[in-house]
Length: 298
Image (tube, rainbow, N blue to C red; front, top):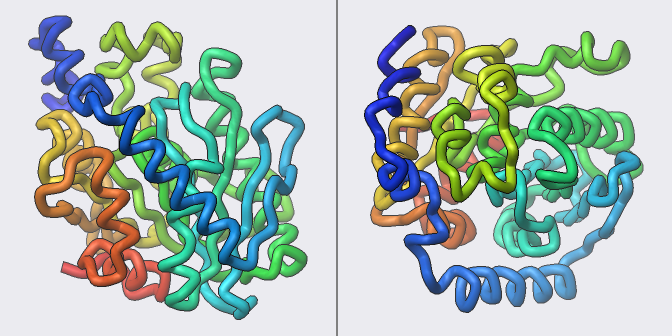
């Protein structure tokens, strides 16, 4: 087993908390970060052509929102929110849509059920169900089924990696193997065992050692596609989030599968999303390049 999978064993309980319990490092999270995103998201829904709360599965939160640029053949960005699989709601993340819509892209924001009501294993399955629904119903949704990029942040980054590891025809016989044309895992949790050992987090997630192993892209879910990926991490994030990003890039990038790494300068785990929606930022430009099929740019 590589050092990537054993490095965390030297951590104390306090070190796990410092590396992974990110809200503790942003005491303004509930009073400034989330209210700002929520307010901007409300404005986005009011100002953008959108269809909200489209049900794709039977779970309480299995709904998605579509934001349209008025070009049904444009590339589509499917966004999966974070929150350590136990917090968050798609409605908080509508603010992702306007800058991309204005630049000629369609956006889908996926909601999903949360731990501990469901397991991480089930969450991955729910997002697969969402991707199948999006592909099958794309034209009715006003989007292009043949130009889909998946992006997710934090827990959503893990889910993005899981989607890149999905054999779509094996999941559902009518789905194409190349359903996803590119992936952008942002601050992903590529290996779940350190998260399981972070007590403040796992009290709500309830990962077992077996599930942490089974649901880790690093150990059980390598990409099954050579579709390009851009792994992103904030420059001001913890060492462990940098390691989580780099381990995936180093293991799965090949000459045939381009897996790039982009570090958002000076951004922490939360502020990197504010950089993403700045149309003047390199992060926004790199995302647009991926959507246009250019692959990760150095």
